[in-house]
Length: 471
Image (cartoon, rainbow, N blue to C red):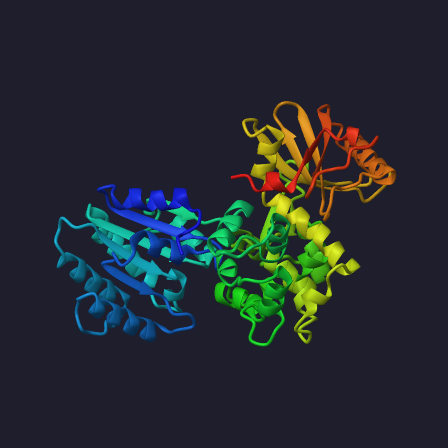
């Protein structure tokens, strides 16, 4: 199967390979996002050395694996005593190759190589600073799913590797358009409505897409998530165990955020934990944000304070809502069709899909050229009624604020009198509490558009599901 998307990333890797300069490139992103797949598709077998870290291994086992990789690529047949000696063997291997040839070194799952007191990072630093950075024929590619480790140890390193990474590539999840292209290439026939449903469950994670098979969406979900031997039945625990040490602390925060879908402040999370001291919470929140599980939003007009944290990882939310307590029914998702429980979940999950496609929303609104900030807003009780929440606010530099509401529907949405009144009420509360002087535009994002009636004219713009599939 040809690679879908990643055009800019593919070209960037090729440009770095042909730069004629020493390159230390870091490729990172959420687990299952396709980092290794991308690198191998770009370079094929054209690696002069390749080694992948081994999870939950000690230094000795990793050094033995590294030595076997050296031997496979034509280097020395010996087991190094430490990482400094291992990188000496790598240097000897690369120096034995023709000088005119670009030498590409690929180290995958770097964080798994740094075990307790292994000094792996110091040895890598010595290898790069003491030799490789002075060679115009070397390209070192470092890759890993532990995004926090990659960020702290390599990209933002304060020691000997400070400023040594020449390029960094962060891989985002696929968009709806890229998911559609994948299904089309795999000859899996799903409508755009069904692709949106897939996204609400699995997000744009390439690995999950690779598990899709021909058949209905519901049958795919049952097979992957509920039936014995389903590839994703144990995925939630694997995700966190493979990325974080003491993963239980991270899962606790994910569970807390899953209970409050509108998001929580740091203090709210502490109260949920029943803790007075937030020691360690800041790091956990930062780690989860860097790893793509949560997102921090700045409420409208709040400045730097009052950040709200929301769970934005689709599969984690789906697992905690629909899988964790329903593992005994192999046809759970099929049988849940048309139920109020599923309908309520779809409404919220569709909001998350829209939040993941704000670039497409701006394009549909014709404001892609206008500077904007995207945030959320909730009432602080200064005006009646209390508890008003607006999940997507687009604050525009042209003195307009778009207040976006999202509705998931299997047909054209009917804007009833009572809901129209709620929208007017939300605008009034927003205007009163924020004291904004900007024009307030009401925007509705829905699957198939809106039936025209006396209330639909109050909407400044209607964005449809097709708009979300924009490139």
